[in-house]
Length: 421
Ligand SMILES: Nc1ncnc2c1ncn2[C@@H]1O[C@H](COP(=O)(O)OP(=O)(O)O)[C@@H](O)[C@H]1O
Ligand SMILES: O=P(O)(O)OC[C@H]1O[C@](O)(COP(=O)(O)O)[C@@H](O)[C@@H]1O
Ligand SMILES: [Mg+2]
Image (cartoon, rainbow, N blue to C red; front, side, top):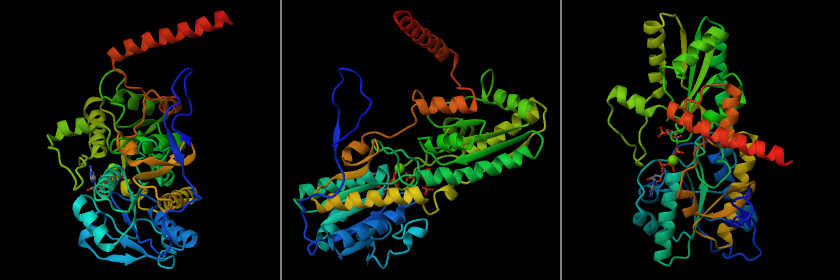
């Protein structure tokens, strides 16, 4: 078993444990009876092709399965497109390319039509690669399969560039994306360092979770300020962003800001009087907070501060996810694919695979769809970022009072300990 919580308090419960992923002594399906299919859904992410390749090779090399279908174009491909036969030869080179060999889409999830199709084609193993939305879709398919009493294993492989899937340590492709983001940050830094009063803004992906921005900032050391959706910020007045920009320009002559696309959405919506728009999957379409922030800083320094600044705005969003995965993500993708294959062959169903405290586990799909993984402002990583950039925490006055109370309590606890020692 793999423990979900490894840091526990004295007297606390043992907590939730998941089955450890890996090959089983007893295999549920025979090689000849397996008819597997693979589908990729949602946005792109580095490493999808590696997962695809390793599922096909894993099924074939480890279990002698040779009936594997590729469903093209996401969930809707089950009922609106032809399938392609996948063999180790067909997928041999695909891990060297970004994107998905099978194509993907948003929307189009019709549970009944999908399960009808699974039944009609005689499919008994379904591998579903996708993010939080996809996993919800996989859960619906699993329930319908169960309701109909079909002998079908449903396995989810979590994919998301935003790292917003709960329970698992980290999603595949995330490291690759963070690494690629360094190139954009570096370009911004070189540009603003070479001019007077240079202000660089880099917009990175991150709809509701600022993990890419946070990790890219921590890795780079050239970033002065990181703005993420989880941490509200403000522009004007004491402790605001304008004041910080001015201060850094005076001290260093330049500043680099990294902004996760989901940060500051309320401000942008207010200034544009925008109405909520959704994509085909029902995800809210984001407004361009990067352009908005660029304009706000320009206006402030030109009209209020009467100070000339050199603004450089870099928007590499799709570039960080449309690339092949790096070496460590490739290994990670292989582990995910092999774990999924072992799980399905052993007869498990309705599970998602992924590392939990560094050990790969079979997690009931419902556990990963219940909540979304977000940056916790009270966790150590965000504190490390604040310590590294020395940016304002944008804590409002009322919160400061609370913070002071907490600090007082912490001091008291520390003092007590010293006395007792
Ligand atoms: N609650 C849901 N129930 C069933 N299917 C869903 C649900 N949410 C999303 N989906 C389907 O999952 C697929 C991918 O979802 P999306 O949110 O676009 O990407 P991701 O899975 O990467 O988060 C889409 O085809 C969408 O229709
Ligand atoms: O333009 P697209 O393809 O809808 O993708 C944009 C969105 O996809 C994401 O990469 C997240 O995608 P997923 O939900 O599929 O993981 C976000 O960061 C971004 O807002
Ligand atoms: Mg998603």
